[in-house]
Image (tube, rainbow, N blue to C red; front, side, top):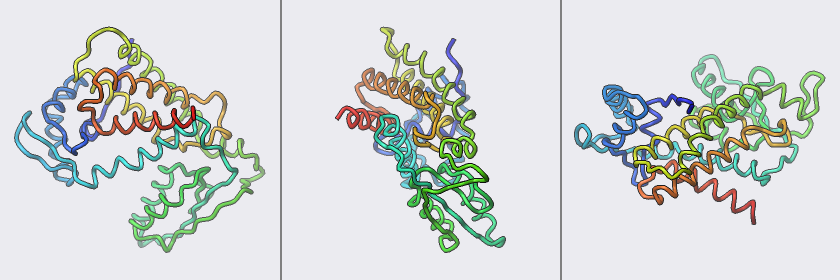
Length: 291
């Protein structure tokens, strides 16, 4: 039995953006139906995205064309950066240098919203709290942290530092620190689910049965949704700090094989931009690893 994947309508729209920045409404409604979404659900989502300025809308109904704004297209960038880093880690191309990267901030109560957003951003970037206003990452995250603080107008309240000598309480062993600071069990469970989702879809893609364009896109969207659920809370800790074997490595390898099979099925024609980028990233890492 193939595990059902819940795909948020908003994610579906973003996932179907093509190289020219457009989303074909007919394809959107067709894929949405295969995912169990109603036309009304899709219409309301489009209305919200247009109201937010994420897309512009041209035409009506299934003949409509959505155009992603520049900010919406750029939103794919950081995701691609982190995915590229993950595949390079999996291939052994990003060994840990033993450096911990810390970010400290002291934002006043008058800027509470910016302070809370910065805190959430640090966690999203893979940070873990050491104490109030002090977060740590095992990866060099400084450009992303500075960019976020700058956009929030709190760059002057931010301090960045790095060290090879980190202790929390009586713990200084890096592996034990990583185990205490990040919920590795919960993250591993998400990757185990991704494996359960990817395996039967890979078998289907590698089989001889004919699949329609809508079938292929639906499979790609399901994989992207489950990969996002697995990777969003993942701090992408260096392999040296993780249990072996780490399920994230196997899960991403399966998803990469699915992308390769999807590409062979449609020859790359009309593939949404996000999947082209994902497939390119997986190929880059594989080529570098072999080289």
